[in-house]
Length: 462
Image (cartoon, rainbow, N blue to C red; front, side):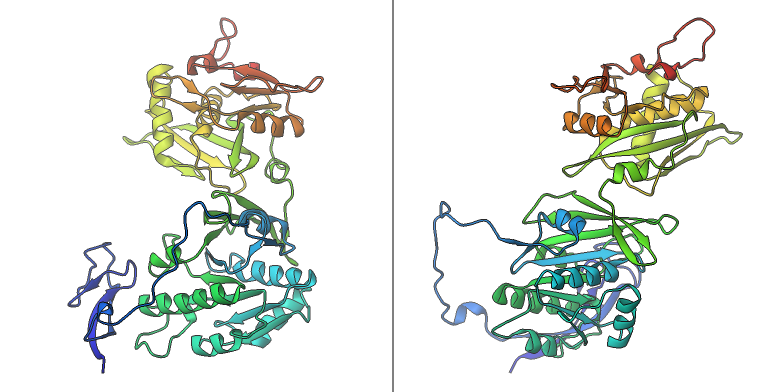
């Protein structure tokens, strides 16, 4: 008989220790170590005879994974084109951000397209889910509901010759494996429940969606191995003050990463945004200093957003630097380059930077747009409203080229912009009266003085 022994496991990182401690030595979290029991078999796996594997050459020809559309175009885009049979998708996000609503909408639209869907909730009752679906106008007989937390019962219901095409588990932290003596949501329970559900999805060929809770740092709660077990990891992002929601892929075995889908939260649920650039620029104020339009890339999608900067005098020894939607360390580097290469003085001024719309930008191509917004805020001269800016800034003050420049320029031209400032050539086939590209290779070209007595940085000429 296997013997059950007690050990202590960190619920944040999964590290195992022989005794309890107030602080995990592996990840540094406090009060995250709890006692769990595990079964130890007296003999190793090498003591018995195993089944020999059927090895195949790497050059074997296989067909591409077929796709099944959910009916939610933005979700299909992030997944790489639609659902893949036997795949497991993990979606995380802040409480109330819209994870359950998104998956409920996807299940109903997929059922409308002829797929069979099962929605299993461990946090609500069937009546609560049904009432929310009726309020959002999401009623379809092809979607089956169940309220359960027992993984054994769920497996028995799904393990059938004709399994459903799509299964949603909301959420994986509420699932319980009855042969493990641990509380729901612990590392052992989450790992075991996910393993059993994913194994059944692979064997029966249905697409499995797992909803995951997140920690205060925004990471999916539970062991990190959970993200390695699934095929796709999605994060649902957004600010409570903004109606926009961003669905971002950070891992995808069947498609590209860093792809995004854009939604708006309304009274009738999540609405897809086909042209997010126009949405993020819809409330832009023209002829205001400290604002620039950045032409960025999110996966394969070009996206135009407004970057806002505010520079005010500071009476403190250490002026404040506040950033929303961008990397604070990157801002410090851009300020240092501006002070060193252009003699622009920011050391006695407070600097505030914001990416409008609640979007987060991670690529260095935003350096030049940030620098232009900072110079405009300091001088009080607005940047021309029909200008887009992008480019990476080096420490020596050079402006480097960035990838997918032509796609960025075409998106700007499509939205009616007339000028672009970047280190890139104009499109090969420019439209009549279309976009004019001003190439800049040095940061000093961004701060040319137009005439004596003019403001220090004449950005209106851009």
